[in-house]
Structures are given as structure tokens and as C-alpha cells.
Image (cartoon, rainbow over all chains, first blue to last red; front, top):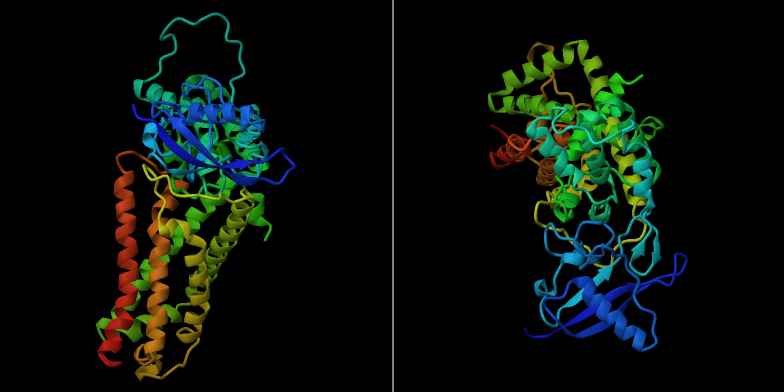
Length: 251
Length: 221
């Protein structure tokens, strides 16, 4: 396969308090079969050889299931391919000689730590506010001991696919974490195991979402378009129904 | 304006949806009344007289004002909060395409809303609190005022622009209100959004038809 050249414009920021700027780099002899992150690895090797600071970015599993990675590529979180994390985005989706802007997630609630690395612990605190069930699970239960309809199980699985990468926040013009919060709420609201804490969960998680400084949902659906797990904003409608239910029913 | 601040982001959106749908309901009733102008001065003036002569109109007006101000205050509170959530903008940002519902209308709700906010008081000043011609039987001749106002090209143009923005606001607002109120279903959602687009064109088109027809008919029907 022919080699390709990419002109990158990357956000460089020394630390959380430093002012950042966009810096140009040229990556030559990149393979179209490389992932975007592998291309950054190659660039970093080059930077290290030249005695420069490598570009910091988060990644872990590199197979699209952990939620660690994520950068904004030419204005779209996780880049141009739908349903794909940036570690699974291959250079074959780019043109030879293309200029590509690479930026971190931008939100008041996601402060940049260094270069493309942001602090996403705000999402963890939303989870800690109610994204769990409190009971002793004991040993493995018998299969189908708790009956759950196929349609509900499917719907719960669709939202449980959320890997918490934060692309929804990055894509939203309001930097809202509504899709993330709604996915976590919906996952447990759809299953009988989540029923005991149903009302307090949604109210606490929404309150924490707001406390973290995320914006509100404008129902534009940019989040579902960039979500690597293609979670639908139907989850946000469900969260709104859960809020209404909890407001009326909780005491 | 502490009340929208006390609501969560979700609570604010539910309030936006409720007040928005109520205002759309008002627009439908308003439009139906306006279209009576095509039947004739007698019917139109009688309608406006019966509407304003009913003492319950004050209760309705107060309720409408509260809904309008609630929608306004909540919309501003949401916009300020949303802007604060991303203090540093992207160098490059574009729509993701794919399953997005982003449109020019959805991205400019605060702008189209602001235009309506300028329009409404001026509109009330022109018609509700405007010149009161007398007609037979002690009824206000609103018909004559309408004919007069819509003979002015400047006013017709401004009215037309304002109504295009109303339509723009509803283009996103109608289905967005339902989404905020928790209505989202794979089967009904596409239908709901199509109906919202149809309704926004119908409402804007209906309001625009009155001044345009009157203007090109030379200020009389």
C-alpha cells in the first residue's frame, strides 16, 4: 500500500495552567492501515528523536472498548467515521496530503491537563452520585431467574454500551453530558435490578451533572452522531421521563 | 428571576417544552383569527370584538404573558449556562453529520427568539394598542387598521421577516419540545419531526399570507 503524508495541526499545552496553541507537524511515510493513534505514536517517536516533547494523549485498549482515547479531528470528536473511536479510526479515511486539526475535548468541566489529555473525572462523579445498584450480589444467579423482556434487555444493552469517553460532551455546542448521564440512568432504569433506587438515582445524577458545570441538552443530536457506541438521544428523552416520574413520586 | 435558576438543566428544558408548546397553541388560535380577515370586515371585527369584550380575556392574557416570560427567562438562563459550559472554543468545529439533527434553525434559537421578542411589543403597539377606528354598533374597526398598516411596504417587509424567524424557531422548537418532554419513539419520532416542519411552514406561511395578500391587493380586499 502506498505511503501517505498528513499535515497535522495539533493543540500543544505544557500543563493545566499553561496557555496552549496549535502547532503544525508533518507526518511522512504513514501507512493507510495505521490507526490515528498509531500515526501519533510514529510522530511522537520522531519528536523524541529530535529531543522534543512528545504529544500527550490518552489511550488504553486500542480496540474501541475502554473509553480512554478521544480527540477532536477536524471539528468532529473521534473523527469522520461514525461509530468509531479514534483508536479504531484508520488513516485510509484521510486523503494523502490532507491537513488535519487535532484538539482535545473542550468543556469547562473537562480541564485540559496536557496537550490532548483532559480530566474527565466529572463523569466519574456523576456515576458516584447514583450510577450503581446497592445490594449484595452474592454468587452468580441462575440464568433467567429474573425475567426481563427481550426488548427491555436489548434497550438496556444499547445504552450500557456507553464507554464514558466523553465524545458527547465534546460534540455538544453546550458541552452537555446529557447523553452520558442519560445512558447510565437508562441502563439501570430499564432493568429490575435498578428499580430500588430508581427515583433517587436520576435526581442525584442530574444534580451532579449540573454541579459539574455541564450545559443543558438542545436536542440537536450531535452527541448521538459522534458516539462511538451510537447511543441514541432516545436515552435523553427517557432521562427526562425518569426525572418527571421521580419528581412526582419521590418524597 | 430566581425560579428558572432553581431548576435543574432537565427541569429547565421541560419548562421550555411546556411553555413552547403552549405558545405554539396560541399561535394556531391567533392565526385562525387572522385568517377571518379574508371573510370580510363584518366577521373580522365581530370576532375581535367578542374576543376582547369577554372579561375572561384578562385572565387569558395574564396567563399568556406568564408563559411568554417563563419561556423567555428560562431560555436566557439556559443559553447563559450553556455558553459558560464551553469557555474555550474549538479552532475547528463542524457538524458531525450522520444521525445529527443540527440545523441552522436549531443553532440559532436564541437569535430567532430575540427577533420575536423585539417583534411582539411592536406588534402589540401597532394593533392591540393602535388606532381605534369606530365601526357600526360601537365595535372597533380593526379591519380598517389592518388594511392601513399592511399597505405600508416597510411594515409588511418587517412583518414578513419576523414571521420567517417564527417559522425558523418552530422548525426546531416543535419536535424539540416533545423530546424535552420525554416523547421519543423510533416509530413516531420521524412523523413528529415531519409534522413539526409542516406546522412551522403552515404557521409562518399563514401569518405571511395576510399582509402579502392585502399589500398586493392595494390595501383593500
